[in-house]
Image (tube, rainbow, N blue to C red; front, side, top):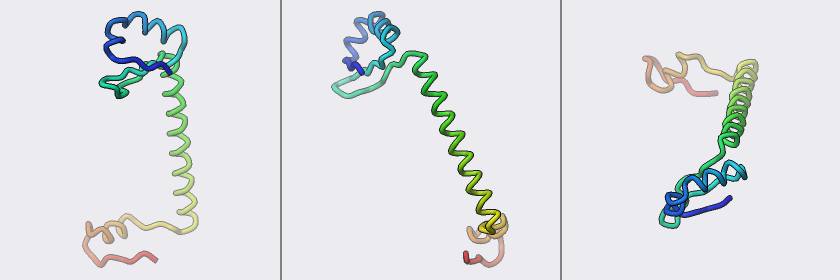
Length: 97
């Protein structure tokens, strides 16, 4: 990944945009010696976004499966039990077994 100071980017915006379009390589922009942002080609960004959405969907699926397994194994509490434990509903707090 190419890294340039923001002043260089400001002076040659069109050149650097062309560079990103041609190479597909991300461009890191720094300010005062510290990375501030990264410019990505739209295709690269779309691929990253799609991959992120796939990962999120997989995480949700795994959590649902784990919850379903816990329910089938009897490892759950009712809404009322949780409310009592948190002190949100009247009644004695129940201890978890």
